[in-house]
Length: 276
Image (tube, rainbow, N blue to C red):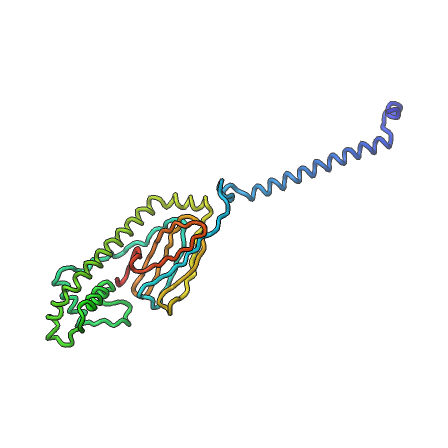
């Protein structure tokens, strides 16, 4: 201070001390600014949507063995995905008509199948469709005996076969009526709730999971194994063969650690189109 009072300027020692204080202060301020900038940059890469929902913790997955088992497996093309929400079922271009239940019509179909156009299974699908083919073959097993070899016995054989075929036709028509009801309900539920389901899946971090399928049981089935997070899933997919397409949408409620086998067949298909 004596030097400052005498000359009006600080001494060299005092000047150096003041400069050192300013340098340290500036360095600390620069470091603080850099840290703030890094924190802001990291924060910009972490959005609210990317964070897990409140109260959730990582969970063990569920395992599902998927098996597709239908009689028609030749030249197949399969595509299946686990969706955390419902998807819109395919549009039906040509509504499926029930099999005829009147005796006269059944007799004409019996004559056609039993003699005039006996089926060769090398065709993509039977001339009158797979439903009639199943009804006819099941009736044959119940009735016993062979198809008529000559025209003379054809009409008598057809008259006798009606009582075996008609119950099969009625049974198959009821199955298809129930199938159509499931399809219509799925379309309605999709329209009503798919947006909410997609938002909930996004909130929970659930993504569609495709299934890799491999041939099994000497080519008579297709199988695949998939692991997914716990929750509600829709096993959705198509199995296509020449002239025929199956569609499924099966809802599963899965818990952590579940091991489930799901078999998809022609009985639980939501939709069958083509030569059915």
